[in-house]
Length: 577
Image (cartoon, rainbow, N blue to C red):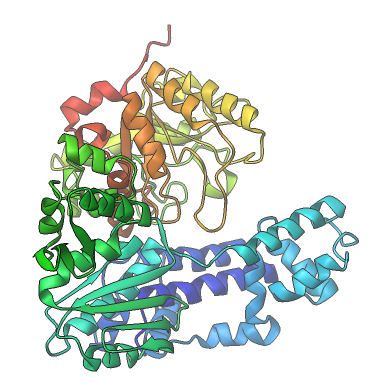
């Protein structure tokens, strides 16, 4: 069966989880987590490369030992080392880490003391009141875990966009090779570039009949066929992702794409608009009576009701139909508009590429400038830079720029915003920098008022340029901290600070609605990769997708500007006197 990069990364992540629960050396755990991240961020299919006899490519943080394990997983889909770990630690134990409040240490306590190694057993232990007697738990912790487990059961499984993408692309490639297939498009929330997808909706233009649906059901990654007919079929893949297929005639492709792409509210609003004009829209076309007047293309569907084409990312019924009628649809930002990246890390903190590695990788991605923003010391696990090391890095950046005019490195720091709203480095260290990125990395559970005031105080700092990942969420594993984003955005406007849209697929922070709020308030957004390795610059595509969902145009995005226009926007009051 095909092995995707996401499958390899999942094995490395599970190994890291089990080692951490086991209490293994932190550097060893981090090596596997870094390997998972590097594999997920690699732009080519590793199993295909290895299957063709090519050497395992050099990825950041993956040496000979991890490279051999990568090759083993790519060839077989399994890891002997993971199988060895499962002899002592059941596979289901890692699912306990999905519950907020359960870190590796607590999972080990549960396993050692109560023999809990699955969510079902945890649920039973909570309902039996058996957690409160364990060291480090207590009644309040038990109740929090009870609520988290209950919430987990009611939440449908969703896949991050970047995780679903390789499965979608492989399936599209498979279907496109079938005889008689004219076009294959993934529709639904995937095409709208939502940050997570519950399933995949695939539209195929081909002659209706059982051939395409039959071959779809026979795809070698299918674990279960849920239904199969002549024009539609539904399956579940081994990874757990459900895929629904619809086969339509080529003259109905545009109508089907419209029907299966837009959010329900968007489709209803457009159908009502059509009904007011005596038209009917369905997945087969636009009809006046029994006569089809449009449907071969999506443009023809919108034109039939007097509208210009509406990009998929906007089809959420958040004002896009009204904007289309008024002729005010945004010209959405594109990845090629980005001139630089204002958030990246090197081996000086927790990155996996040297300053030179990151500069060259950014240049390869078409960027003209890159801010080097390693961590400050407060985040101890990241080995952050103190003022002396930061100054030394500045000297190295000056030397690089003198020798490499093709890309400019900007001096920066990702400085922790402390609990009281102060910054983790003195003004004397921040003043010479081009970019100061402020970030919350601790005290996520402050009250809404406390968290908001903390960030507002940080934004008042005259050297803060950019607020990083403004809500602190990790999609699927950590909720956003409670903060008044309307006040944050208005404050950013008042003090001349900018907001980051962090393009890491597990963050995508700002959310799309916050991008719209920033646009409305005139606050510029910077689409940044937060790259920790050269391969991570590919994440800028996901950040651009999110920006498009937030109605951002080129002019709303800080880093679409060239350096000459950018530099004045980065500098607030730099006068220490």
